[in-house]
Length: 400
Image 1 (cartoon, rainbow, N blue to C red):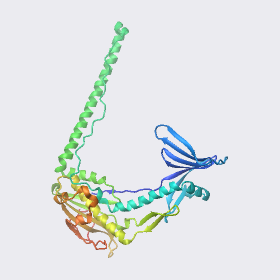
Image 2 (tube, rainbow, N blue to C red; image 1 turned 90 degrees about the horizontal axis):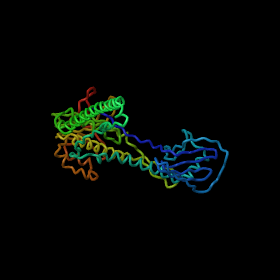
Image 3 (cartoon, one colour; image 1 turned 120 degrees about the horizontal axis):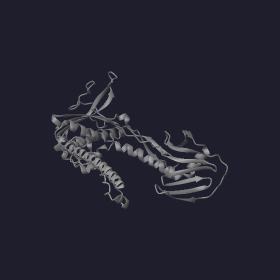
Image 4 (cartoon, rainbow, N blue to C red; image 1 turned 30 degrees about the horizontal axis):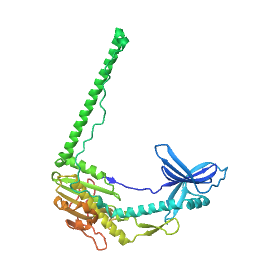
């Protein structure tokens, strides 16, 4: 079985450019706090979302130019291939005069936007080499948390109180009593339904607790379901596919990790230019990319092992192998080249200090276990024969 988790970020926050009766105005900022620049001057806007309270004040000089056309457009910020800031509206570059004015009046905000983009580019690259930091410890599986029954218990109708005329007139008294009896009957039906739903909820929670605390120790089907749920919640920095097979009643697991190809890694770095509104974009060296890819490969395998041990308390041994899809130079067909394969016992895994993962090198850590790997000093992988693999339902046997 397998699944894919994808993660992506769109770097397209925008500014609002308003073209109104009195000319151009630009609004920039976040909800509740913004600046508006227009022919009537610059204004600061401050509001408390959800309260209806707001404050507006003038900033700078007033320069009114009436009788302009009225319309509103959206200005989008983006970066071109050279890292230069591009301002567009509806995919069309702004008028040069408008472009110059926006860059002049919003220079600080635009530079802050560039700094954010630069940090995101660098953080995205660095996260590839540090996936092991999110690895759970083998004893981190939380205690079962029963979900409370939140439906409010039906309230009984008020006690019947007969007024003066109802006590005096039998027919009116009978009418009031019949109406009250209907309300009591409806309440009893509502209460019976509520109690039935509460009992069903409690029974379900008991069943879930038994599944989480008891069946997870011995039922392979439950173990597979729980591990799959856990792995589905992982957000890998690059697309990653996992197959697994439980063996020996859930005491042993074989994990196959479909690693991203080295070509999937970002190849550019970014830095804020000292002058002008642009990023300096540079190509990373092949040596750096290979080094980060090797760190990513070991980190993904390390984290996959950790997820298995954390989610399956009865697991005693894990074999995890990572492979990359490449073209066979002899045939041109795509094949799965295994890059590393490692066997770890729970006792060995428990010896790791999971409170100090920031100091741990997954490459060196995996070398302390039974590891099959061919890695050169320049971080080049040579295909290996894995210790074990998850059998494919319909595929050629993988291998170097």
